[in-house]
Length: 535
Image (cartoon, rainbow, N blue to C red; front, side):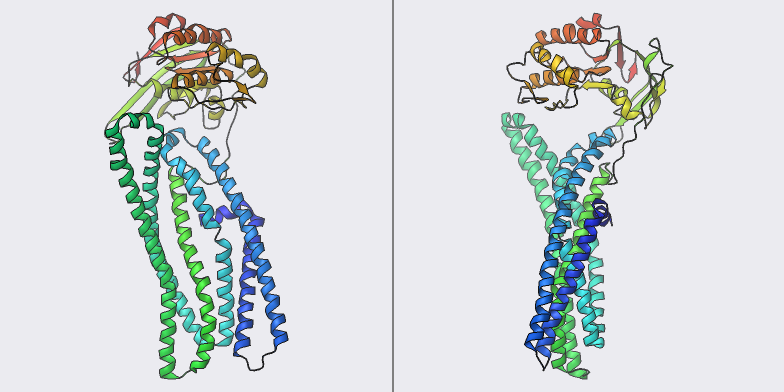
């Protein structure tokens, strides 16, 4: 099972400690029950021996319970931490297109899903203890009455089959609840990020809540209710079947007299001690199914739960000369489909050579494929055909990470990070304040402890801050996607005549997506993309 595999891989010593201490807890619990049972049904009760025996097992039970609880708490925290770190790395390393298409599903994975997995894991000591208690009591029951124990085992087998029948139904409703939770998180994202638009449009804000959030939430809750009800029914059915079986045995004993009712009463006292741990164990099976549903959804997003290993090889082509293309794109093709999967847009085949230190302007109308082409150049999208070469070496899975690290890019929807720990400290000190001053953010932002002091800025100011962050990365190649599109003429002038000029003087290779034809003279070449083709 996936859950057990995750437990073992997280910390084998802790997992073994949890299992052993839980089993021993169950066995000592059995011995406590045995002591009580023998004391109340025996004729020669010895107070001293009872106190010694009962007290010893009672203390052992308490100590082992604490050890099991402590161990599982440690294990749970370690698993939560490792899952967060592993999933964060997996999100970064997963195919960009899959992550881009499933962004709304990532937040519930990193928050709700990991919390739910931890909650299921926290019940492990109770389950292991319960199973050990049931097995221990069964062994004592066999010694006490083999015939009655055989009948009880038959009931336990019946309970097991009831559980097997119910679990697929629980899994079905759990899948439905989880799918609609993804949709709900998507609506919540729109609620938070689109609050300006919703606040301005009363009709839309009302329909967004009434027609989207409320129905999705209601559907999700219906699935969750069905899952809970079915789960509760099958949990209680284990108790009902066992009690029904005991009642049937009473009738059978009364009619056949194969044992006395008094003897059965003593046996029944032992059986009743199995109800609680047996219910806990069967309930855990339901939890495992729910956890597997979560893992299924994580896998569908494109994130595997295996340990993350990034395969990176550097490209060092000493034979490459500056007179040769830095980036050589040949026969590059990419196709993406619309939601109905019937219509698609094909980009390419494209051929392009970008020289080292060149400034290339990429132009074209809306929908011509400029941003998609940019993501192909950056290595964010995997082309459906053709190849990309860097310094004469073809980009493969092993060299992709190295190739991507040659770039710094600013898109129209780029996220602004406050952290600047990845920037060279000396370069940050040399250029940071200068760039903030140049883009007139000095009254708003400072650089403190390798971070921007704030990013609570207007959209235009955030875009300027993302430009500063990009320049401070001091990369070999820069790609700017319509950076100046929504800037006023003053900052357009700064971008084209100061920022680009500075980067050109530093020998950087620049790819600029733009519509500003008045600045075309700054480019070494202007390349036009039209209907997915370079013209």
